Length: 250
Image: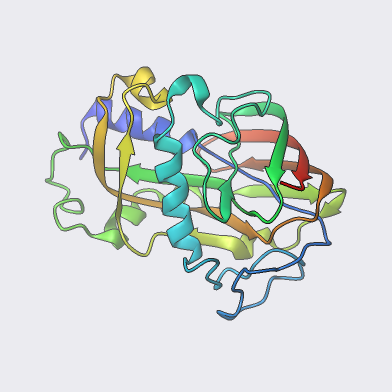
């Protein structure tokens, strides 16, 4: 069993970074490789859960999202940001990450360059291994992905979600559940919001796994989009987020 401080930290981490975003019904797939099978559940512009966008699976992009979230100093954190001013921090490549909040209601105005796919966890949980954790549980010592996932999966079971993009509901959100296929490492910066809340030193933390409901969106058309999403998980966390999104011409 974990000691009490580790349990408290992990409970908060599980309920903290939760994200959601979707897009309009008129997107172009562009350079995104959506040929890996499976349907998009009747949602044009949302890549199938089995697809590999820019060479990564949904589970690999989910790990990359958590690595992004831990890499940002607290003053620039896009999760606690209430306006959208930090949305571009540490973004690079063909895929942008978008974040939800720590719970409650948030309204953000964000500009995204054209041609960027968007990866968005609607609701997600992560297990983060700490160097001082006891290993009597065995999962960390063995890097047992299935065992680690068993500690957090129940918190996503029974989650409720709703998303609209320009007033169009996203269908069959439950089909977009993902979970880690391998453990990974996150690098926590000293001034990260979690480091500040719990006195965690900066450094590498592993093994990490996650589970949740995620979407990979093909690049949106240039122009304005309104995205509203709500979600609640079995642990009692809930959010209500609105994005006023502008896709620029670069």
